[in-house]
Image 1 (cartoon, rainbow, N blue to C red):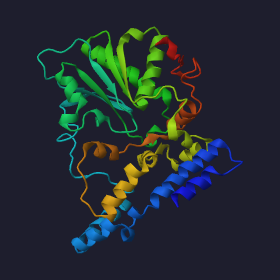
Image 2 (image 1 turned 180 degrees about the vertical axis):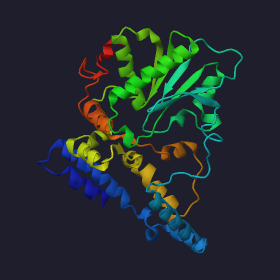
Image 3 (image 1 turned 60 degrees about the horizontal axis):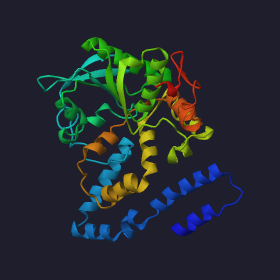
Image 4 (image 1 turned 180 degrees about the horizontal axis):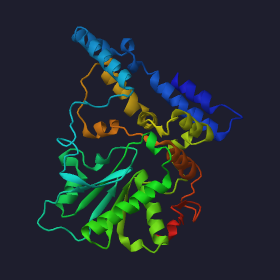
Length: 341
């Protein structure tokens, strides 16, 4: 059946290439969903488990399903296994600066001496700040502090109705502000920076703005983690950036912000077997206990997005790829030319 569905999609004539890609993408979740493993009566492991546990696995599976329906989100890991500040996001630090858009966290030093140039990390605003401070053994922040770096991390506010008009310029101004706060607080001429994911894309624009203004020397180095700047080949996400999808985002966010669960569902769809059906089978069909996994806990701790900026991001960067064209985009009144960096 899977082979036939794929062949039917590929065999369609007279369809626009982009529409055909969308249809092919939509066909794959259908194929994944129809797998016999996803249904209790056609999954032999589930039948054996139900018999061995005298129906307890079925009860647990239903409880998991009902719980997820109530919260409107698929559970990937045991939600009770982690507590912020204790066994995840536990590197000691404090908030040293706050604005309506972000908090700036400074982590406590653990070495007798620290390096002269501090590090400012910009994590993505589509997730929580502690992606680089998971459990202590996996924490990049803890490791960096132990090397003698003075580490700062920006924690972006999860969007609400007060952020309906937040756009590209606001995040770039915020990054410049964070850099300036650190420079003045420590009385240093420059900082090292890390830009993660979408915040890395914005960091590239920030560097271009500083360069245009003659302030490039305020950033000594920039490192990019999984950050895209040239969007000529954006992968399967290109299927979500036509006018119809962008308009759908507008209709899903009447109060000016997009519920983070929509974004989480989109990313899960990109890897359906790994991030959806694997957990449908384990959690619902087999009634397994939730695994304990810090990265999946972070992944499920969703944030809301400013809808206007999210739509502009998809349109200007993913769809039109304007960031790599000199002076096609601007921020805070300054044209952006990446070749100046």
